[in-house]
Image (cartoon, rainbow, N blue to C red; front, side):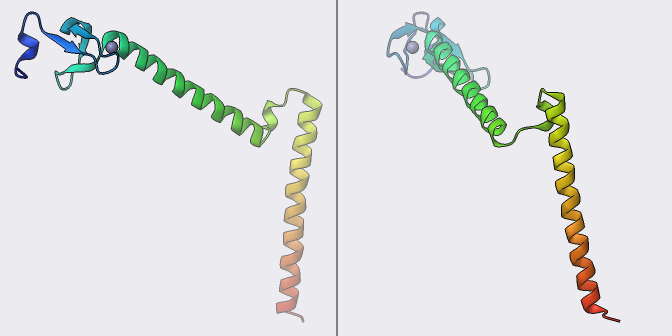
Length: 114
Ligand SMILES: [Zn+2]
């Protein structure tokens, strides 16, 4: 009885989720495979909603994680605080370059002492 079940006028199908036996109209048909959904429309809606919610919660928690990891200077509301952070960042970079340059010069002097 598995062949052409969707052509039978009073065809029914057992939902794989709620286990209710429902008429085929209560199931969506996969547009790609032309086969009825294993879940009834009610269950399909519930499943899709839960999947959507789980996804959006996942991305939300990732957002807050990355926000905690490093404060973004341009997102600091207070202008003076923002300038202070930028100056400090610039000074750190400058200091880094100065030290590197000094180290390079030392190495050069070691290589060419005359
Ligand atoms: Zn169902």
